[in-house]
Length: 228
Image (tube, rainbow, N blue to C red):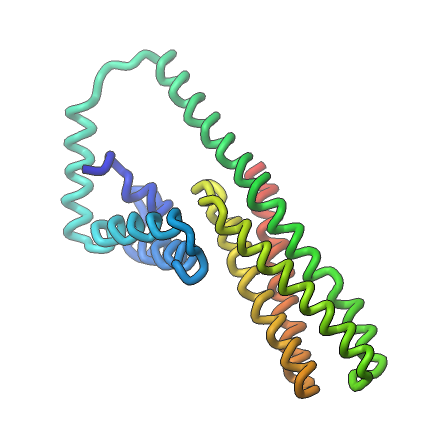
């Protein structure tokens, strides 16, 4: 049987969370680790754990039974532990969590953030150059070159994002990055459609999607600063 409170930890909620909060957390995490956006084995295993946790915690009666089991196990396994041992255990746990987060920041967050910046930052300059004459073949070709480079940067961002499961204490940061990547992908496709039919609606939609992506990226950065 799973360790006590494992289902709560899996959904990144506290044992006092409401049913609505549990449902919201489950939906958010399922989107984050869905196979369509995370083809790695770790993503699939995480989905299995999420489903198992929500099957119990999402049902009020099963949750009550699960909580009673946790309580019973806690009582049965309770043993006198010195304050020194407790302090050592807490220190070790905190150290492991910090190391996991540091590895994720180095191997996932920083490269993903760099690739997203390579896509988002040049957009204004590219649009300004294109606006001189949107029907000029050379300007359109230059803009298409920017879009092709952006697609490659996006592929790299997706690859790094999927390379390592995020620590639970930065789940919010990872979620912002995930949605930012999605907005960037949609924005690139809208901008590409403009180069095919010169319909300004695609150009405006692509710019708006990039603005949303920029906001999500900044929110990820702000949340990470709070945790630092």
